[in-house]
Amino acid sequence: MISSSTRPVFFVLAAAFLFGSSTSMAKLALAGIAPITLASIIYLGSGGGMAVYRLFRYFRGIAVEDPPLTRSSIPWVIGASFFGAVLATTSLTLSLRTVTAWEASVLLSFEAVATALVARVISGERAGPRVWTALGCITLACIILAWRPDQMLGISIGAVGILFTCLCWGVDTSCSRQIAGRNPLEIVMYKGLFAGVITFAISRVIGEPLPGAGPAVVAAIIGMTGFGGLMTFCFLRGLRDLGPARTGSFFGINPVFGIIVGLVIFRDIPGLIFIPPVGLMLTGIAILLTEHHNHLHRHSPDVHNHRHGHDDGHHDHKHPKGILPAGLDGYHTHLHSHQDLIHEHEHTPDIHHQHQHTH
Image 1 (spheres, rainbow, N blue to C red):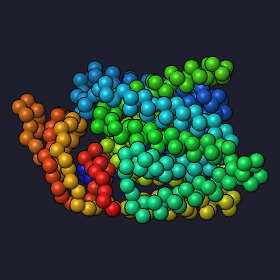
Image 2: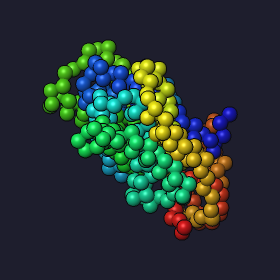
Image 3: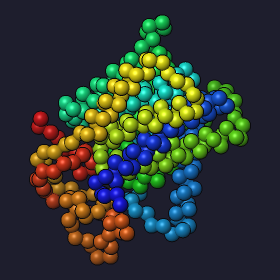
Image 4: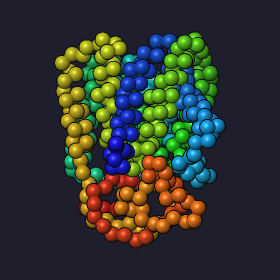
């Protein structure tokens, strides 16, 4: 039985596995599909798959456990879709043509760095020396892989494209944080359909050829599982409880899965240059996974609506008449209030811990 404290970590690690595995699958799919067309089919598969699943739940009468998106959610959905799907996936599929699968997997660990930097700039989320040391290790690993003294600018264009992808995903994560308490099925569905339509229109304008039925189905399955769909659903379930920086940190383990799957698929055994960046990446991930955050902090009075349980020390409210105290898993959704509270415990920057730090 997974405890409430480890459940969000489990979701993010599941997302990391699905995403890391799909990077190599996307590179394989490029053999039969043009890059921007591939990006469009991936996200149409993601949004379409979630739409079908949502209809299945509706006709089966399965209750919705999370509050729906509201009008105020629209800018955040558009921002997450544009940066995290349109820009990021287009940049990734273009870049995968010029880098190996294992290089791409290691470079994608930069997402943890990008997410932490964007979270610091946008929401003021702080991280201690331990976190920045880990992110420094990952950054150094990416610099080693991107360095190409034989090229004009001294860097690999494909590597730069993947680092840009990570930066876009960092913005995506901070946008998604604002709506992380909402229904993740809706978020993934609208994000996928929006990005799929936009990128498909771009592919038609620039005249990319349409793929055959077989490659298109494979790309759609990648979207349903790895680059959107199930992966994003798991990611959002973890994000709501862990916050952007720590979600990015746990999700940063995805290169390990990507390297393993890439080596199995392409049989591309790297040379000695493989050792330093992978060693730095694994060191950074190990530091991030063992980071803890504990200090005296204050919760200001608040009224909001999200899926929650009563075993976390923050939800001790009474239920209005007609609202069940808990679902089968101890979680339920309704509008509830929080009183002013000062206490100390280990925590992450979830939707209840977005406070400022004095040190």
